[in-house]
Length: 115
Image (cartoon, rainbow, N blue to C red; front, side, top):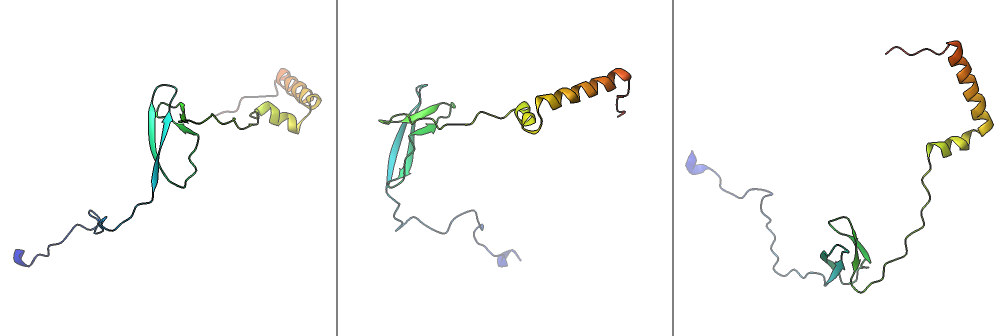
């Protein structure tokens, strides 16, 4: 039985393709300098748009060598819960609701919910 066992390759473990005759796309090396002293070398395709800023492994923004820092994009201030509440109700309505709830609380009509 052992003489008839099939021998072969592991499927998926090794590639049957070789790099013979394969021509890689032309590349350039982009060098980024981190303000914390790190240097990052990244390969890009020769025709690619290389970004002026790259995030370093330390979390800082590394700048492309011989580049100027781009202007920051304008951002909206974050909307808070209060901002969204004021979109739905006026201050006068909120004061009326507060007075109503305080009245119910003082009369003892607001009870805790049992869990």
